[in-house]
Amino acid sequence: MPTFDSALLLAARASASDEGAIIRMSQKTRDLRAQGRDVVSLTLGEPDFDTPFFIQEAATAAMRAGFTHYSPVAGIPELRTAVAHKLKAENGLCYSPGQIVMANGVKQAIANAVFSLIEHGDEVILLAPFWVSYELTVKLAGGTPRTLSAGVEQDFKVSPRQVADALTPKSKLLILNSPNNPTGAVWTKAELQALADVVSQHPRLMVLSDEMYEYIIFEGEAISFGALPGMLERTITVNGFSKSFAMTGWRLGYAAAPEPIARSMARMQSAFTAGANSFVQRAAIAALEAPRDEVVRMRESYRRRRDIVARGLAEIPGVKMAPIPATFYAFPDVSAFLGRRREVGTVDALCDWLLETHGVTAVPGSAFGDDSCIRLSFAASERDIVMGLDRLKAGFAALS
Ligand SMILES: Cc1ncc(COP(=O)(O)O)c(C=O)c1O
Image (cartoon, rainbow, N blue to C red; front, side, top):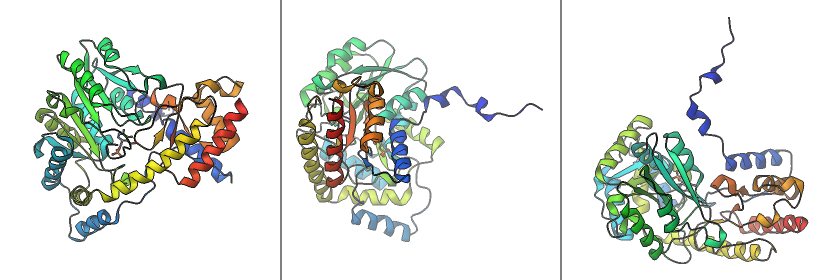
């Protein structure tokens, strides 16, 4: 009898979903800590705050009231209404509740959107540096990512001209993320308008606008792409609760889209998950309807940490920085140090070396489509940030 090897049965798409650098670095950090090593981790893209108490209370009350059953696939009507209201009041976006699809996190909302639109042969424009999941989801859906890049000298913002030059008749979707993970960049209204002018020239291009970090902004303004003239019909807006309301583990996000796409996203979701968690949706109504005091308190704390990180990195000779007007990430360009030693030839190798020799974890920019930078998360305690910066300084000094 031949031996049975289930690995041979894996679909080709299974190889598109590798574990990713963030998970790899987090695992290495855990392994070293388990060996008793002292490691400062600046990898996690997750608020270090607990979910505000009033949101926890709303979830508990919903559970106690028996709100623990399946909910409608696209979400409970009261929450879809609350989201439509928020998008109108805060973002200038006119969606009806029927155009809102709640999902198990923004990740799921993005997957619903990409799987609704993209099929074999369709090209998706990604603006690097980009959040890791976009590329993976596009590949899983059978699409072809077309990656355009902008480095530190462009403040990490791909220009509308680069986009115009890259479009082909096969282009179907452009994924935009402002404020941006991993760079903290924020596109200005004028920059977005110039991009909208390019988009409107293309017969079938849609934009997926990921507005996850809209509240974690220190300078400038978070503009919704769909609010620009003529762009609502061209845009799928996604947003959620993980970062702004410190609700990563609750798994709730949403997409808002033109009706045919919204209906399709709900059908996708019905196939994969049957919809978001019921009592979490009740808690989300409480989050949206309350004043933004907690959100502002967390933002101001990130601002203080941003200042520490920006000052600390500016003091390291050879590190190049763009401003960090938003999010809780810094994305220093460390290309000056690559190749200084045999073991630090790439940003991946540099991150391994920093972890092993100086006990500080960062994520290599290669995970975000950039081979010159590393990502540092400052959603960490000020003590860890200061210690992490000291270790980075020592590490880069040793390479100088
Ligand atoms: C830009 C961006 N979009 C979406 C997500 C995913 O959010 P969620 O936790 O709602 O799935 C993340 C998480 O890191 C992110 O950085």
